[in-house]
Image (cartoon, rainbow, N blue to C red; front, side, top):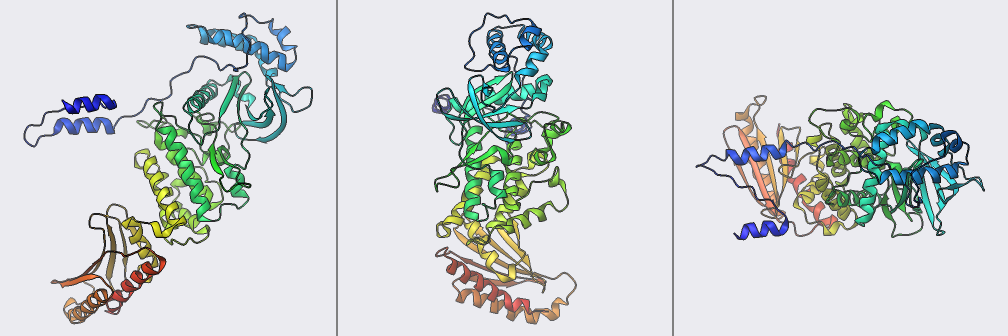
Length: 537
């Protein structure tokens, strides 16, 4: 069959089922199975990470005391040569590695000594030039490779060496970064080398501030800049998620995002560091490794084991991305579990208002909804990454070139934000509408209908029993006729209807443009049409 040939060519598995009459039970059961699938947790990586530059060894080491008495750099070379041989073995690697760590504990401890003091500043051949910063998971140094290139060397805290969870996290991170390098994923720092004893990774040096430094320096106060940064970051994550190996980050925080050439070049770009490197189960219990600053970016399922919820899920990165967006606007780190606070939505909206007012007025409201939906406590309720990415793309377009906006939902919300009578409107993403209630009891909704390509305005008045509808009817009829006439005179196709205890006025229009002036004209026409109904008591 043609369908089978198409599916085979694209690697699509065809699932067939039989339906008797209207009984589609088999299909519904298959969809339920797909929807309830929970990705497995991380599998254990047995082989230790060995520096690429390590020489081949003969599988032996000096006695523990003799090795511990040597210079730290010599210790590192000898240990990595031994580990290179060990990593090439098959079964039994884990047990032999465990015995080695017990016998050579002092030498391993001394191998972690790193300094930028001349004459003692080599780390497996990389010349340490200066310490750059110390973070939650280690210290970063500027160094020079054997080829004379500037590189960044991140040395993880010595405390991880006897912690199985942290070692596994390190190995996963190295594996992830190797995949990203081999796949040439744009926007990810180039991984160069790594070692487990001592635990460090070598990356290309990125000239520019981290996201944390840029926000602290009050450099993301304009929507153009903030949305460019947010969109590029989401794009990098999306590219990583879409790889056949499906690489997740799982440790998104401001210190792991770099803005390359941010201060010197208009063509600056976002570069992401440390994919899957620093996260580990139970991070909240390890104050040495994770402080409160970092915990605010971790998804709930990363901190506490939740039955039926996996940490190997794209929604983990969506949560971290949402908190990064909040940090960019609020200019402060989210508190641990702040997304569970009663005033979380208010905090998001207040943060969005801190960014300088945009030309497209509804951007802050839509940005706040991205953060709100990305940081839902339940994993299944969060927006997926594609949805976040698409919305950020649309907001960036609206910020940079408002006249190019074509989405009817965005146009409808922008008009609602410009309409005085709709102040405090509520947005419904299911039907692309903005709704508001008037003091008089009337309500107004503005829909962006992508099917018809039109805007639809609906004004309703429903008797709630408070008013005497019979007495009000003589006022409502002329008021509705006035509203209808005002809409028609402003280019709307309109009509009205009064039933026993309700009133409905409708209008539709195809927007002729999305310039600021044209949208304000439509907003004013809605205000004028609502005026007769606002005066009904």
